[in-house]
Length: 503
Image 1 (cartoon, rainbow, N blue to C red):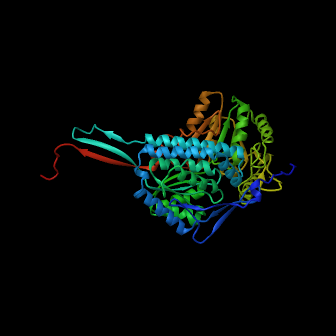
Image 2: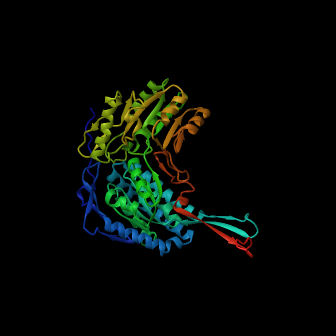
Image 3: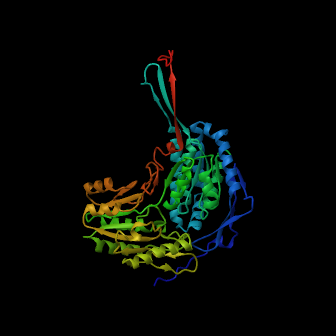
């Protein structure tokens, strides 16, 4: 039995919760009916934040502000260099407030503070990359249509974009969407998760300080039914960018289809790491632990399925078990912590339920599997389950917790079958010294990203998204800004018109 975790109370526990107002048309406003949302730190148990809770009236006001800013405001009409300058200033301001933003995300989500700092650093890089794309966005010209015709293809901002982000990477994921929409010249209404809204409100302040005109970005805290749903269905919205569960993504897509809005979605994953006997097994073992337990497994990209060759399974899993038992679980604000708190009690119970069901179905808890006692917050021991078969729920469904399922194979064909035998297709990993093996797996796995002899690394230059029920479209990469544009064809005729239709 593990000793109870002793969680130290931070200075915020003795202070009044930080209060955040909605951002609408460049102004900080309370909800008209005075409603608020309180967020308790999942790692410590005290109320850390209080947001004004938006409803129908606030959604409408935000939409009107974004629409006005797009139709008559300066932002879509600015030089690309001027928009880029605002994005670069925002990146610089984020950098000056990195520690503050990281601490907010750690307190509200339960993620380790060291990890949060890395995420904010990554977000800064994305804002700077988006600024570069603002200046390189371009159309096309066609002078090969005959001497009397010139064709021009323009890229124009699509309009008002509804951006809906999840709780697991509050600042990073909004930074994978918003700067590219802004680079294109769009305006936006943003809804962060009602559990982790604080850092997005800080971002709103940063954007105003950076010179973003009023109404270009509006930020609403609230729940899906009251805020998210009308943001998807609103007639002034031209595009919806959503990250979250596949279940909610399906509802979002169905709602958006009523008005044929453009939809970009990054959804769930059930990602496999395939390990062959000739791999660097020490590196693969560390990556297996990282992939399974990073962000407490609350990650769409989590390597939650470990697919290991039978010839090395026992020895390899013994090494993975040893490493997993060294993972430091505890206080999110402790720099040494690797796995922090679960986002909520309900979510922890859901994850624990998957472990119980796996045992009932014949799985063996190889290590972990228990809720950890603590004086504050909710924590789950990193868990490895062996004897998993492909038909088990824990092998097919997104658990979204620190739970690693182990399946074994004898042939590359079987490994690929296991990897693809899921409704998801977000990412995968392959570990082998053979370039032929790595290429065969990378080409055959139905996933948007395949890591070869590494796992869960990301760069703004590389597109990110999934196959199958893991989403639609791609974020990041050199075409990220294009996703927030429409193409317009203009044809110029030179000289006297010929080819009369009548007479």
